[in-house]
Image 1 (cartoon, rainbow, N blue to C red):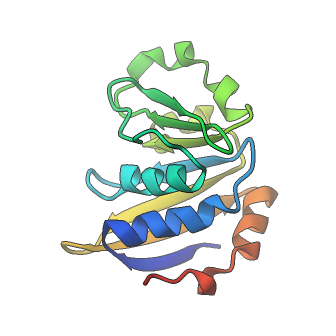
Image 2 (cartoon, rainbow, N blue to C red):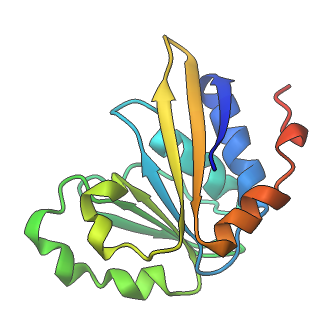
Length: 156
């Protein structure tokens, strides 16, 4: 099952992520997919803010992994350029740790990802419009999606 919304602009993308952050717990993994400029980092900024991260959340393109502290640690990964060095990153320590993992371009390391995760597809639909689609894999994420009050997500 998938869950889909149409959003208008970066502020709505961040608000959506903030609402989702309220449902997250240690060990959760969000696999982000979308073209360049689709809003992956914007989504993660909203998530981080809602998790109490005070630092600026920006793309970890060249550092691969950035760690932020909030009510839960946030591990923000961009594996677009990881290449053959993926084994040296110690991803399992993050995936099965005490924080929330957000992996941009997650499909590039599909074989290394935990079987259970929430995949978030972000697509641009014109200049400001975006579509967000959630695809839960595993009981934890199916329950998260079923319990999340999608109708209550409002965008003022």
